[in-house]
View (spheres, rainbow, N blue to C red):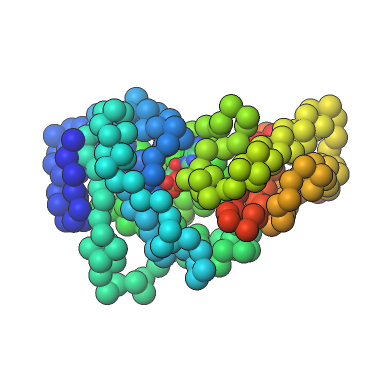
Length: 280
Ligand code: AMP
């Protein structure tokens, strides 16, 4: 497994792989790798000759007062996970080599970046889109694999690739969960025992909403209201949002559109903000 910390060296490696006729898949991560990331690495492994994982806690996607400083960094353990998933190269730059003085050039993704998570995380999706476009240019992948866990992020990146004619095929992988339904996330470590015990109610709320839709409910407001109730009744978390949106536009829906609806939610504990979603 090769390890690169400088963009130029990473790019030279990737261009060499391409020149040799090999296809490249990229899995961008912030490290602290868990079974969710492993699922992405496996999917990517099956779709390329050369598998690159990036490990970079990107400061520009964290807002003031968010957890950039305390975000869990477990580089040695991450290397073992990558080796176990037969990663060929890891790109793990420092903030300085990644950005230098050049922070003023960014990718703006428009209105989509203000919806859902964007409403309470201004600048977040600009940071995400910018770093991912940089990673695409540095790692030169044919495909890039992302988790549906971060559905808005995936949809925004897919749109960015299309809008800017980036020759990378984005692939989405289903959310990997704990046995009780809680979506795996590096931020789950922040939860107290009590918060951890009640947190699966977030996914339960989404599942019950989906069941209701499958039994004929079409009114998006009703569906959202029911999901909110389940969260309120079963957790101490503050609801950031629960919304049913069209996956093609991210616009809120009045009527559930089968096959096109994303029901997404975010809740806030004092120690952590959790997100989850379900497609219907
Ligand atoms: P992160 O390291 O949290 O930035 O996540 C890196 C990638 O892993 C993103 O594409 C996430 O959507 C994906 N990911 C994170 N958690 C999960 C999960 N529980 N299941 C599937 N993918 C995930």
